[in-house]
Amino acid sequence: MADERAASLASPILTGCDAGRHVAGRRVTVDASGVAHARCRRCGCELTRLPAIRRWYRSGVLG
Image 1: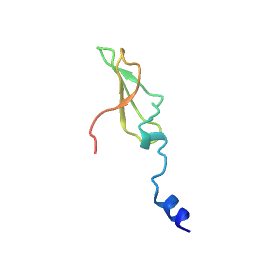
Image 2 (image 1 turned 90 degrees about the vertical axis):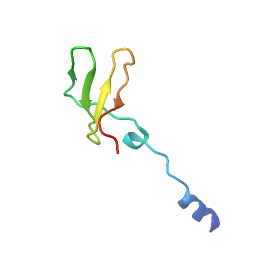
Image 3 (image 1 turned 60 degrees about the horizontal axis):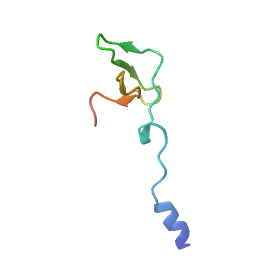
Image 4 (image 1 turned 135 degrees about the vertical axis):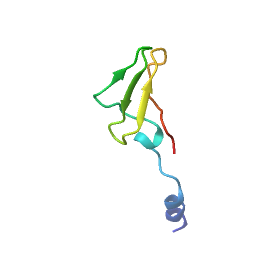
């Protein structure tokens, strides 16, 4: 009984957008300095990708 209660109180493993793993949508715009901008397919947040980093990260208003 105590094991079941402890398991229910444990925090779940985060996946997807909750863990910061966003998926860029089809429509990607690139500005003059080469920075790519898109929206996440799952949650709709704004994403940015710099040419040197080559990884999408969340940008815009947070919170």
